[in-house]
Amino acid sequence: MAFGLARQELNDWKKRAASGKIAFITHFWYDPRFPDMKTVTKVGCSDLIALEEWGKKYGLKKEWIHHRHGYPHFDLMGHRQTAILRAENKMDQVERLIKKTEKRNR
Image (tube, rainbow, N blue to C red):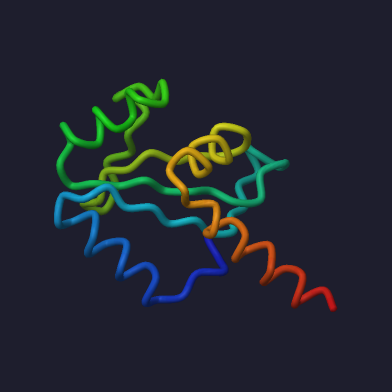
């Protein structure tokens, strides 16, 4: 289950991914299979070759690509999520969620 995501953010991600560019979107997430995970980053791209090549840089296997809803993507969680977001200079996505949580808890 995804939450903490604005419709415009999702639309921007879809537009970028559909255009063949590597697109990142991070949101709060809950799945009982992964009770310790609070966020997930979806890295998508309609160009499967580009997505596979991007994933190879980080040791991601093409078999891990989710082919759902017309937006092929990798799901990143935990330490791998943090390491890749740092390497891609995208930590602002996680930091934004942390700030939302802090505001809510005040």
